[in-house]
Amino acid sequence: MSKSDWNSPEAVRRLAKRHAAEKRFKFIGLAAIVLSLGFLALLLVIMLKNGLGGLDWDFLSGSDSTDASTAGVWGAAKGSLLTMLVTLLLSFPMGVLAAIYLEEFAPKKKWIEWVEVSINNLAAVPSIIFGLLGLAVFINTFQMPRSSPLVGGLTLALMTMPVIVISGRNAIKAVPPSIREAAYGIGASKVQTTFHHVLPLALPGILTGTIIGMARALGETAPLLMIGMRAFVVTPPDSLTAPSSVLPMQIFLWSDEIDKAFVQNTSAAIIVLLVFLLAMNGIAIYLRNKFEVRW
Image 1 (cartoon, rainbow, N blue to C red):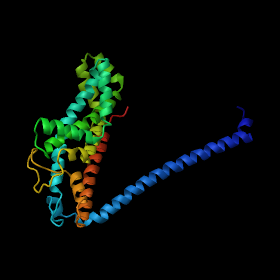
Image 2 (image 1 turned 120 degrees about the vertical axis):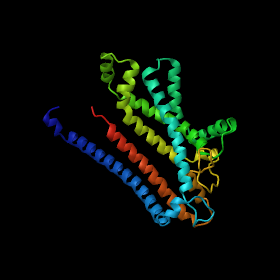
Image 3 (image 1 turned 45 degrees about the vertical axis):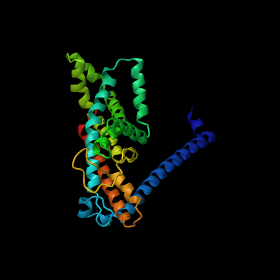
Image 4 (image 1 turned 180 degrees about the vertical axis):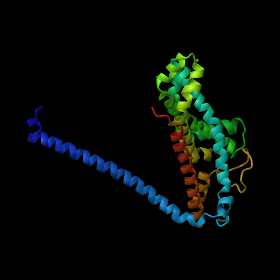
């Protein structure tokens, strides 16, 4: 196209339409971001306004109570910590090992493809289905203690594991093939190459996916509701098999109270849960930046 063609009225109109469409797209994208952040900021302001007054040491160190003035969040927070501990200890090693096997060692056979499709589908299954599975298997079949961090952790581990497997496979797949070829070139075996060279480079992505999956599990209520963790528990759990509640369930129970005094407790508990979630996401960002290798 010659220079005169670019300056023709038709070309000028086309360029003007393209620039206008680009500006509209930028405006719509910016408006969507502002709207989303605005709703989030509004929610945060409401929670801070209602809950900051209730954030004191008695609230942070106390447990559930029928009296809003003496109710605290420590029992539920400790239950969440124990539940997340069980979830992490089970889902992380099993998920990472499964990702390594599927990406590095699994043969290219039909049943492996079925396993991969099943894992991808499990990551999208509604969380309440995992609650029903935990109720049927861990409580009804194995007679594990109801409303305990052990059963809650096992149930959430089932829900979190597909996320860890998928993120782990993506992180391992992102390692350049030249790393493997160089390791093979100096005589390393398949296992040595995977665990000494590939896995350390994939670790940032694996850790990020794991912590994001754990953060999702921390905010879940539906699967824990199915295994009985909505019980009224006055004392903090002293073991993995003791009756317990968790922060999301405690928020749900307080929000359902008739007494309006629990509104402040609900907002304060939401603030505590948000601090937990922000801390976990902050750790994920820190680990990603610390261990990330730029090529």
